[in-house]
Length: 179
Image (cartoon, rainbow, N blue to C red):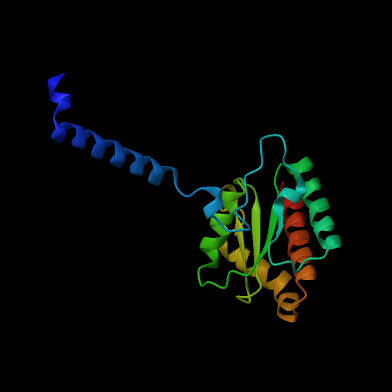
């Protein structure tokens, strides 16, 4: 017991505890409040998932009727296929929209059979990412092609409502056909 009373031993224990605490913090990663979105989107509690959980209009560019339609599409997808198409609008403006989309998907706890569509208004860009379980069926090139085909024209005109609705409906059709 006399060994623990020595300052060198006591300081050594303090340093080890601090290193362990930092390692645990790094291992767990960023908290939801550090992730994209207003104050960081919180993952929904189990059993409380609703379609509107997957519509995040952080840039305030979608109308209420668009959000309702996106919600109805997700209601059907969740009930029939246990998957969703998350739609996020933001004013990110960064070059790494893929990383932003992936961080957001993780923050809202999307699954392997879900999609996330990000419309970066200030960055004048958009991005579509498929869940990990879909990669074999819906490739990265498919994501690029779908985003271009179903969003580009409306997005370039500033019609974010139609851009979001068109891509969401196209992905819902793809899910319906392939499940």
